[in-house]
Length: 315
Image (cartoon, rainbow, N blue to C red):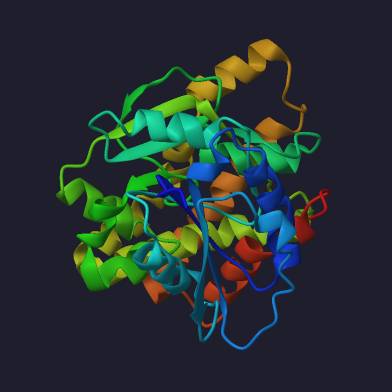
């Protein structure tokens, strides 16, 4: 058996939830160098397709009591991975055939973190575009390769050793907040953007769920900061909250310029970006003041695990 060079970690509740992802992984140019690490609830028949899982360097099952919160499952998958590079995958992110090869090549350089070029998997919707740009616009596939300050938490390839340095804090670091970014900055990590490693990301395109997710994104980030920040700093951010939408939107200038020239964006995208930034800001204020709330984690995990249910795509 080939020694894996890249482990893809994904949390799921059933094989049908990751069927499309596995199909994409089967098309990878270096499939025989990939280990799939499937994190799933113990005692559940996932309905795995043995034929679809052939040809990889390995398939490793990790059983947990619950898949929620997903951060604990992701951490368990990272710890179980045997490759030196770990890619944190999602049930609704679909790699192009050369993604793994490009990530492995980039990691031969002195980068701790490699971020692929992300594209919108359901681009027919203005809601989808607004969500995609706010979450991943800084790593849009058309932007140039080069060293970057950092990346998102998921859909990223890490040196496993770097993640293991976080120790017991890895469970919370892989949550919806910004704990991982803080931990990596403290370790002086170097990150690289590699757009030749392409990944299509599906985004919520149903209005009510879209608005709730935008709100919850802000609330979860602020709740994570609330656990680290003194009260004075939280109060300062609450007072400055009217500026948050401008900060969020300012990060999207480069991808918006490219997309405006290409004529790709639906006309409603711009006002939805403003609405989404406001919803996120309201969520942040609530998070700084009151924490995550009783159901926020469960709702965000549902969106992450079954996002295709809230889009025009099917699994």
